[in-house]
Length: 220
Image (cartoon, rainbow, N blue to C red):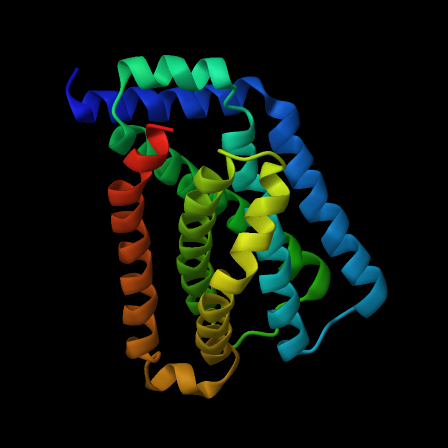
């Protein structure tokens, strides 16, 4: 089978599994809603810096839970079946694209609930939407690769969190720095393009590393 057909079939499989296991998706939505509601009861209308910090903290933990699930559901027998019918590049790329789509949806839900409960302190809301989507893509890419590594060991979710936090800190710092431009008049003069290009370069490097290195994990 052509690699593109393998990729599209695997991606379709991921989406169909998610639609059939709606309890997992609803569970993530409940986690988002309950977390934001507790923040609302505690803080009310939060200040801009607090709002920004809490948004990215919530987004980080949503990403860990969402991405880990995609590999936790892959039993050993199913992985052996995938090994016999597809290539490692098609498999990891399907996981990457699926997790990017899932985090995009979770990001929109998170942002809607944040503005509904904690208000909108931004001066450029749509700019923050774009920045948050860019950040969600980057977080999902990093944790997809880490989840692929952790899936070869016991206690996958714990190992992914341990490996992920030191790696994700620089990216979070860039995202927080970039998102601050949506809370001030600075954005009208143009967002710091060098930070955007750096984040895009990091995302591209993670994708290339995943395609290059995952075949070695695939053989294990």
